[in-house]
Amino acid sequence: MIAKLIRWSISNRFLVLLATAMLTAWGIYAALRTPLDALPDLSDVQVIIRTSYPGQAPQIVENQVTYPLTTTMLSVPGAKTVRGFSFFGDSFVYVLFEDGTDLYWARSRVLEYLNQVQSRLPPSAKTALGPDATGVGWIYSYALVDKSGKHDLAQLRSLQDWFLKYELKTVPNVAEVASVGGMVKQYQVVLNPDRLRAYGLSHAMVIDALMRANQETGGSVLELGEAEYMVRASGYLQSLDDFRKIPLMSEASGVSVRLGDVATLQIGPEMRRGIAELDGEGEVAGGVVVLRSGKNALEAINAVKAKLEALKPSLPEGVEIVPTYDRGDLIERAVDNLSHKLLEEFIVVALVCFIFLFHLRSSLVAIISLPLGILMAFIVMHYQGVNANIMSLGGIAIAIGAMVDAAVVMIENAHKHLEKWRHEHQASSLPQRREPSDSESTPLDSRLRGNDGVQPTPAEHWQIIGDAAAEVGPALFFSLLIITLSFIPVFTLEAQEGRLFAPLAFTKTYAMAARRAGGDADSGADGLSDSRQDSGRAQESAQPFPDRDLPPAAQWRAGLAQSHAGRRSAAPGVESVAAAAHWWRVHAADG
Image (cartoon, rainbow, N blue to C red):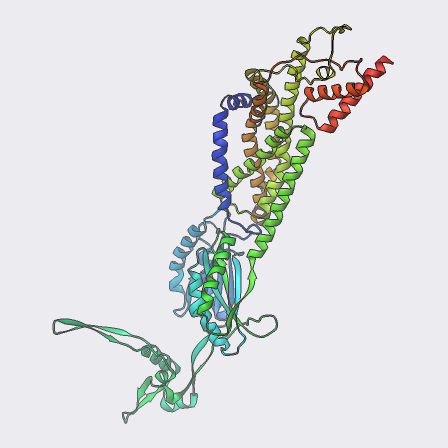
């Protein structure tokens, strides 16, 4: 079957070249759109459930929130591990799924089971799913710095929470923008227990009054003069005075007791569990940009940078955005380093092919087919969702050595078959040698004329190329197949080690398979380059040896010309050595 495929490719060279051009364009399209990252994503498919239970100790959070959630999530389809963590006022539940599970399918299943357990949770416990990101989604972070001293940490945090955060969320492929550091502004009510006891008020009564006071409601519409007027009661609290005027109760004398009578109202920071500090120069506020799962990290980072540059004129005077982490630099350095190594490998392969084949066009056939195999590997990577990272590009680098071996063997075998054909037909067409008479003039230039020998017709040429390729094609195919099968143990790896080495095995296999699929055209391409020169060449008789009657220098030149005619693919140095050896052999026979 391999031999038939080779002969079909030689017979349909135009279709092969057309398919090659189409695959090249498709491969360039896929390579430009393949996501870039420094390393493969080693994290599991996971869904995070965060539950806020303010003011509660870790043991209470564990008993009332974490335990009901973890026991319910154990029955989620595809879940292999459920982990729960309880902190002061917060609960985190991690649901890990089997490899290959679609992240958004997993999130929908978790939401279904979360609705079932909602009735078992305390009323004040608020649950929410984490972002649709992975453990390596942290791609960029920044800090807000005010060197002028005009803005405090609370103002910087407010700028981050209410301005930058929402603007950056509009950037494509950004799953979340998390705020860190600074002070979260709060309206704080500090109750006086003595005054509460004097008025007979409880803590719950104060909380209920606060909730009823901070709300708005509508009163339908009022029709006047053939026009409708919407009725709305505005009751949102906007200042400390609004808080102080909240009524709590009325005394027997009809005097209203307000919140300002039993509590101190102030603006202060929320209780913090940590701080953000920059370069030992003090606290700052900032944000962390998280990438959506499976998206192009480098593209998202560049979009975030462009968005921040566009937002800088809108910042208050004196406030600066200082990048604190940028994975884009790591990605560019990693990919550029490996790209340069691939380029160096191409150059080394080109030199080796040229030196061992002694034929520039044939070496170009082997070299040009390598990028084609790599582009075809990028096509499969793009549609499989494999990122271009150190491991996946490393697999391509490993495959180049095996890819070029088959091309060198096939092209060298084609040259051997052509050389054998020329030798057989040249021997049968040589004229009988006779000694020139004294009266015949034998110009030195005519006796030194080079000779190309008998050349095959185009039909014979393609027949020779097809026979040569069919002779070694099946063996080369199975040799590459054996190399590919040697990576089966890598494909059997699971969990993190599988996610680390699978891109390398995939890209190496794809590149070698693409190279083998396109290898059948190598002999045709090499034959095409030779046949263009062979088709119009006249057949000349060849002189078996340079004339011994010529001077030594003339014999040297004649031997050099015949050596060049016998194998034009040889390097000049090799031609000179061959001519010198032939001249020495002739004179040794005379002696």
